[in-house]
Image 1 (cartoon, helix red, strand yellow):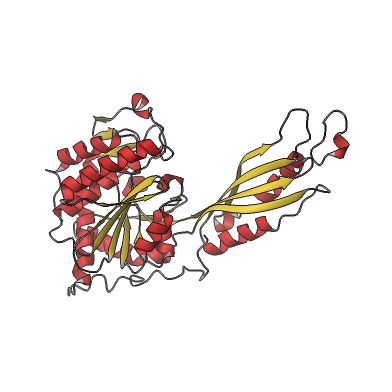
Image 2: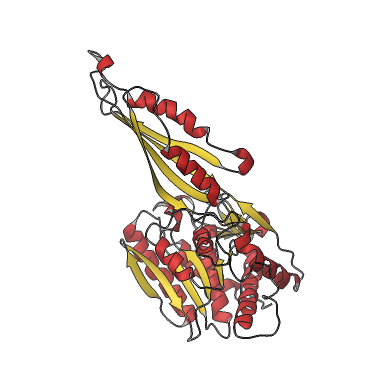
Length: 397
C-alpha cells in the first residue's frame, strides 16, 4: 500500500480548513459557505471542480471521473450536528497526536481522506464522489440523489468514521421516525372538563403501548422521544403529538412497527389517532457488505493489518445505497471517537494507514472492473449484488 506519512501535514491542514468552517445541518447560509470551502479543497487536490446540485437551498457536490462507466461511488457529507459558535467552545487543536474540533471525526476527516486518496490514484476513471449537505438530518434533500447515484454501481464506499478501534461498519440498523397524532375535543378545564376529550391523557396511554412495540431479541428499539399537547393552561387539550424513533436491523421489523403504529386504537371514548411516517431509511444488512468486507480484509491482511467488522445502531447514506441493490461498505473513514459529543476526536497516526487502505481497495476494485486477472473481487461472496436484503422485503421509504 501507499505511504501517506509524508502527506500527513497537508492532510491536517486541509482538515483544519474544513473543521474551522462550521456547517450545521439547519443553517443554510453556513452550508452554502461550507459547500464552497469543501469544493475548493477538493478542486485543488483533484484538479477539477465538482458539479453543484442545489436542492431545497442545500448544495451537494459531485465529481465524476473519466470516460469509463461510473462503477464505484464514494460517499461523504460536509454537514455536522454542531451549531455555529461551537468552535469557540471546542476549538481546532492537534495535541498529543489527537485532533479535536466540531465535525472532525464525523466526518470531515473522511472527506480529506477521499480527496487525498484520489489525488494519489493514477487513474480515477469509473469513480464518482458524492458529498452531501444534509446526512445528519436524514438526507431529506439528497436521499434521492444518493439512491440514484448508487444504481448500477459495483460498489459504494462510505467514508463515515470507523467504529471503536477503526472497525468497519458491516451492518447498520434502519432508522424510522414516526408521529402519532391524537385528536380530542377542547373544553374549559374548570367549568366543564367533562365536555372535553383529553388528547393528552390519551397520548399518555398510547406512549406505553408504543414503547411495548420494541423487540430486544430482534434488536428493534421503539422510543417515544417527544410529546406535545394543549393550547392553554385552562383548556382540555384537543390535540397531542407523540414523536417516535425506531431502529431495526431488518426491513421486516421496520414494516412490523410501521403497521402496528397505523393500527393503534384509542382507549379514550371519542378520541381518534393518526399515525404518519417521516424519515424512513432502510437497514444496511450484512448481505450488502459481505463481499466488500472480505475484499477489504484481504487487502489489509497483505499489509499485516487485521480489520474487524461490527454492526451499529446508527444509520448513514450507506443504508440508502444498500437498499438500491449496491454492495456497500461503511465506516472506512477516520479512527477516533466521540461522534456528536464534546470529546469528538481523530487519532492522527491512523490517518495515513486508513487513506492507504482506501487507495488499495479502490485499486483492486478498478483493476477487476477493467478486466484485471487478480480475481480478488470475483471470489468475494455477495460482491455482485446486494439484492433486496436477507429478509427479501421491500426497502422502507
